[in-house]
Image 1: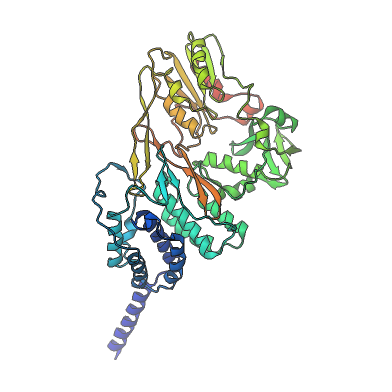
Image 2 (image 1 turned 90 degrees about the horizontal axis):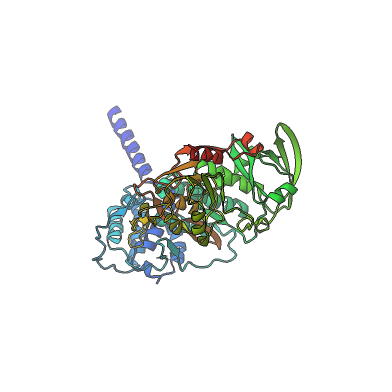
Length: 541
């Protein structure tokens, strides 16, 4: 009798265990739907022609997927969906042996035995092997290699859509990143886990503000200084000072306009303790997860920009000025009021000493280059300041630094014929001249060196006798892709992958630095440019 009872108990336990194994959670079902939706959109030849209203297809199959009870039930739903899309011809061009950049590529989920049965996995694999080629209704390649999102439906008055469309927006965005974001493999959090984490957050958003915060959190998970999202055409206003994270404090490190900063009683080296009686450190920590940035330093700086800007025309700051705590009122301005990018008084170049010249890349135009180098013909060293955003003149400029052409950048771009795989383009090369400057070049960089500045620095670093001085740059290279998040919200990502010729990454890391120098609070107070001072020292050796 006891033996019979034991067998019965074991049988019941086994059945319960089998049932538990077959149970699929709601998040797993939704995540699988999000992946299938995107995979068919960018891989299936018929879907890629744009002959289906693909968003309506998602809305139609969403309730069916949620009602699925186990993997066979779920697989049957997806098989029915695929069968209704039409036949797929065998693709003779899909067996390319191209040398792909494959660090982002992973379609192993097509064979997930916990979610899909063998029949479905076989169908999905067949679609991968016979995928759409050349043209896709929903995405195209730009001349520079990055993507353009096309033919997405316009959703008006969707500032806080219902649950099904909130999920649709998440899945649209997630799949664009999954298949076309060049730096997906470098994110701190695995992109699959981001999907599972964000589904309940987006699904259960309480109101418009909560919903938008969740989207900001999603975008921030790209760990990309180029990434942003805008929910309104309204322009924020800014204080006239740059705030940097120095010695673990929020410090005034520079000005967008010296005169306007002076009118607002702001000084270099001011440590900002409070903004409108709110503790700056607390506000920074609270907002970090909503702000994109490639590395910790630039992410913190961007977070300061967020909390110090806004719609109020005037704010109160509590500052520590050389040990004295005081409160000041500071006005905010439209950024255009600073005339920051077109400062006619800014120095283009100058002689520091008889032997050392200085070039400020923020102000130099292509027409200036020849005259500048002629004036520096007798110099032994030139300091080039790239702690700014230069004109797109790296190629023209590089002929004055290089006696021979040199590779400076390896690029990989999205391949829409095999989404999530990327194709290499020819390495970019500098220009050259036998009359190139023969002396020492000292390149200055810091957190202000972003994107084009970093790209330019990579080209200049090929010079024969060059030293790069400063601190970690913004770590965001490659052309920017701007597209819409469902509801008309504008968002952006880095569009191409940029590497040094040896394959090492600039994204997140920033460009290579030979001599690290960081600004200090004491240095700012005393009006010192410590990075420039180190450059003078090296130039004089």
